[in-house]
Length: 444
Image (cartoon, rainbow, N blue to C red):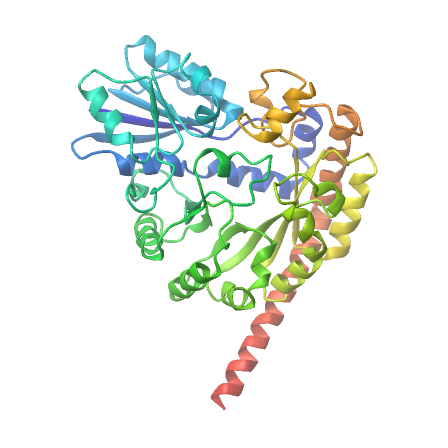
């Protein structure tokens, strides 16, 4: 069979104020463009799971209206974020009208399998590992089930397959590689850790090294983003991983949490291993706002460490991107200037803001639905992380939208962004100088 794996990339923010602001906020726009340009690692992994004897083509679609000449396949596999799931359904309808079976997987399909089955022939929940070869075999003989449940364990051992980076047919400046799946923090707004895997799983370092080699054969100069919820949870794995990649001369970015600075030895390895930035979900500088967002109030208890975490990492030349969620239940209109003041005083290299978003399948979505606070029962195209889909507890929808736009403008203006990056460059230069001095002392 000829299998087409089609990713619907990117999404469109619905908030008009933010769309208008985007033209004047280069840092905000630049990060959005980077995210939209990242390939679908999930579909490239599906390609790697495909049994021998089948031809696989990987495609990316940005604007569905521009897909006038529909590529013809024997089987189509689709992937889309919740914000673009209706485009996926529309594309599925076009293929099904030609008698071509369509498979849908990913987070949204896992959260809403009954809905998805109204639009596609087959739904794969959780990861594609374990079941994708069976789906292909069943379709090849014309006898398939509508629902397949993928593996939630053993995805990096029993059912592991290397992604097919070679299928990408365009230049790639940034590439994603996964080193882990899931996150034990279990924040109520996070879908990935709860939906795709039963528990946190870390990929063996040797497998990651093999994937780096395969990726570099296709894209030797690509900047790497580790596609994990929380890369550096395990200090033993982190030490082995960072030590192994240090000789490779990589440049990369990762997401982790504040616990990384509990392990100074790991922090000391980051810069020499190629780390340029770490994104850390602080969520709010106010510990009170964090109560209840995870089962053990872990993030609330860590809030007093935020400044120390920034200082420890940035003093080592690692830029911190501090992320904050707007619209938590304790937030009021006064929250926006408070967050801005904290960001400016902290000296953090960059801040990132998102609006609290109840993705389907999350405890947050279930809670807001029970409380009758969702603005619509079906709000998928607004799951962009920048659009308001619920009634905040202590301000109006309009106040949350206006406060978000104001905070974005104050943070991502050219002058403010440039000042933060210059300060980070100065720290990196000082850190390199200190390292050179230490080496010279040892050699003398």
